[in-house]
Each structure stands twice: as structure tokens, then as C-alpha cells.
Amino acid sequence: MIKAIRIHSPGGPEVMKWEDVPRPEPGQGEALIKQEAAGLNYIDVYFRSGLYKAPNMPLIIGQEGAGTVVAVGQGVTAVKPGDRVAYAGSLGGYATERVIAADRLVKLPDAIDFKIAAAMMLQGMTAQYLVRRTYPVKSGDTIVVHAAAGGVGLILCQWAKHLGATVIGVVSTEQKAELARAHGAAHTVVGHGNLPAEVKRITGGAMVPVVFDSVGKDTWNASLDCLAPFGLMVSYGNASGPVPPVDIGILSAKGSLYVTRPNLNTYTAKRADLEKVAGELFEVVGKGVVKIEVNQTFPLKDAAAAHIALESRKTTGSTVLLP
Image: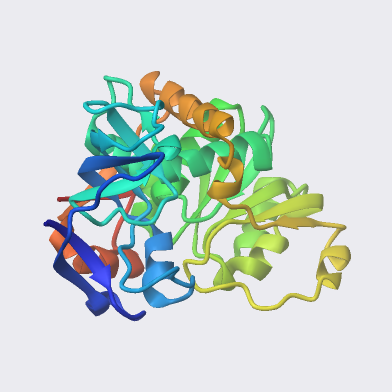
């Protein structure tokens, strides 16, 4: 038997139960890994609450982790027992051991420990595709990053600064503003009520070509109002709830704007793309360009407390669950 956090029906943090479950066996194309750490992400809340539909019940949530390969099924060549590996985007992370499609695993460089790996895979690969593919950030750009003191936000601030951009970080407290500035945000705005006016002041009226928004419902309108004509609204999360139905005509009225709702799984669907995204992440972390801030750790059995802290905006940087 192994231990896992399972949910039997959607709901609040209290629906997560620490249970004994049968140890899984790797099938064709799969690997069994002993998990050393699991990452905490808002997508875990979406699956727990029912915002995202669970594929089955009971469900082991969690989409990010790192550990050691214990065994592999038939046909597996990408990894072997003993390999240090990490992954993102595959449900089942809140467990002491788990099976996963072997082609979704990437080998960890020796210099990156398990806790850092578990904290950075989903958030770091998300940051990579956002600034390298969704909107290729270039030197001279001024951009807006919401939740700039969060896990993805801190990585975005550092990576975008490295690429030569000026980052306007949006946060909820002055303490978080200090953290965002320490990680590359040239300007910070506390709250989003006056965000468009602040962006107008900072940019001298030019506004910005892109907004990276992981908050969703509460910031949708303010984000659109920060964009220059032909600007791109990147809505990649729903921390405040999903964006309600939108009259597409608003994009025309506000300057022939573009909007996208990207997803990590799409950007890493091909094995070659997964390796490229992870490889770029490992490179910038290895060089010290991006520092991964693990600011909270919880025992895996206390995942409910971690969810409460995340949803109440009491966390900064990344949070890791330790089996």
C-alpha cells in the first residue's frame, strides 16, 4: 500500500482525505516513481472544487512532482530505474508513489534538487511558454504581470527582466510588492482598482503590448484597459473565478485587441516540445537567471492546510508538499 490524498466528491479543502491506496503497477509505456516532493498549484484547487471536471472519482489531485524511478513498464526507453525525474501536467501527484506515462517525465540535472524541481516544473514551464511562445517578450517591452509575487509571477518577473523587458507587477499587499521588486519588477501596483491609470502613468500613455493575467474574473476588465491597440490579453488562470461570458465586440472597442487562453499541456503535447520547454527552464535556473523561491512547505498529509493558505493569498512564491 501507499499513501495518497484523495477526493471522493468536489468541495472545499475538507474533502481531501489522507488514505491508504494499493500500490500502482506501471503498465505499457508507464513508469512508477517514488515521489520526493509534490508541487502545489491553483489548478489543484480547480480540480478539488469542481471548477475543472474530474476524469474519475475518487481522484488523486496534483499535477507536479519530482522523485526517483522505481520501475518501468514494457516499451519504456525514456527513463530507467534509479533516474531522478520530474513532471508537470499529469494528475496523481498527491501520493507517496505514482505511475505516469514515461514520455511525460524529464530527467533532472544533478544540480537541481527534488524540492526545487517539484516547485518549478508546472510554474516554470508555464512561464517559459508565456514569455517565449505565447508572447515572445523582447528587449524594450513593458509588460503587466498579475499575481507577481506568486509562483509563476516571480518566475515571469525574473525571466522577462532577463529578456530586457520592463515589468509592471500587480500584487495584493505592499509586502508582496517588495518581493516582486526584488525579483525583477521595475514597478509594482497594489490592487487592480487603479491599474489602468497606473499603467498609463508609467508608460506615458503608451500602455502595454501584453498582460499576463492568472487572476481571471476580478481583473479581466482592468487588464483589457491596460493594453495598447493590437495588444494581447493572456488569461492563463482563474484564481478569483472564471471569466464570465464576454461580448467579443469589446475587443474591437478597446483597440482591436487579441485574447488567448493558453494551456501548458498544449505547449508540451509533443515530446520534443516538452524537452525544449524543460531544457530552457533548467538552463535559466542553472545559470541563476531565475531563482525558484520555495517559501512554504507542508507535509503531504496536511494538503488541506496548504490549500487554505493558497486560497487566502497567504502564500508567496512556490509551495511544496513533502510525502
